[in-house]
Image (cartoon, rainbow, N blue to C red; front, side, top):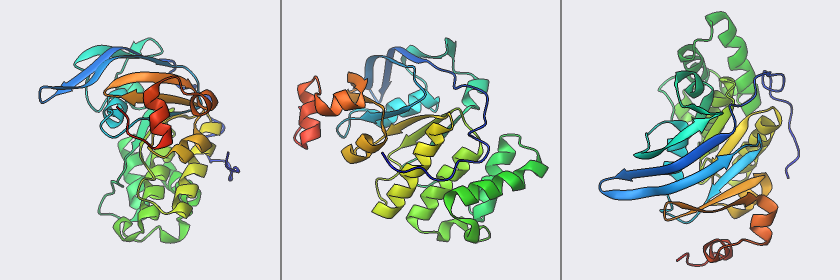
Length: 254
């Protein structure tokens, strides 16, 4: 595991627990006449980091979007602590995508705008913006246009913006897939500290090393189905399925 960084301001002292467990019951999703997610039954109960892994086309990103409520299942249901996703639950979540999604505004304004949409009072925004910039190591870039930052800086800004909302659950879809090792390390440290501060992290990654460094449990997906869900040490040391063993070897997953 990575060494910790400074505590996240406004997160380590949060009182509300994440709305767990999250239960996926008979979950299915079809689009364009193709079934992408099939009969997924899955329960995630811990506040630790969960990695969703699997070969290309397994349905990982779709499953993440279903859990976050960006798309609706065509079958089954998702329950957060026994409740279907509603506005109050959605407001307790945040998501970071594979490619940075930024407004044509300054670095600071990207965070401030998100806080405004979340209903944070104007007087409190500047404090939280400053904390987020410090968290991301971007204090010296506050007035710069966000889109002139490097790729790694942009992704750190996206993560800091998400964390400034103080979510209970943070979803990430391959957030370091195109980053250099130093930027990847910075993102991973932020995720570990977020988890230590009580945030439930659900991470889609193809990077086996990253999952070994970060994850406490692993959901392995193949052809839209959950093939395995177990603690990370068991998954990496002794995967139960042929498909998971082939994936970890870097071979063809049939």
